[in-house]
Amino acid sequence: MGIVAVSQCGFEMVAPMLVGVLLDNWLGTMPWFTIIFLVFGFAGGLTHIVILSNQINKADEEERKAKKNGQDQT
Image (tube, rainbow, N blue to C red; front, side, top):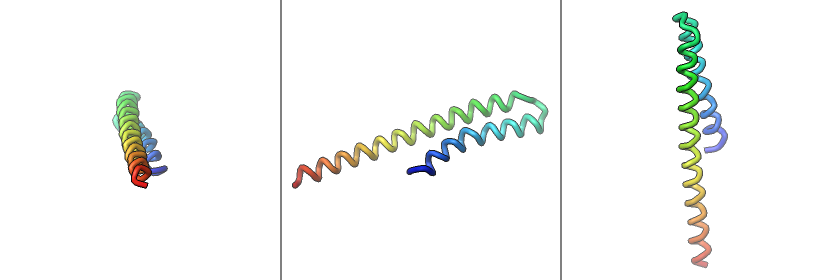
């Protein structure tokens, strides 16, 4: 889950902004799509960070339980 997952969060924040800028340039609607996709990118990136944090916490908790059960048996 390491660095690849964290870098994906950054990509998920930047990619929508780029789409918004491209749409604004193509349609001549500057800055509306940029602002809209900025919000979507920020929300999507934060959502993914929360999901990753929950997964990491769950894995750590399971590892602690496994260590505790292993120590109790010896």
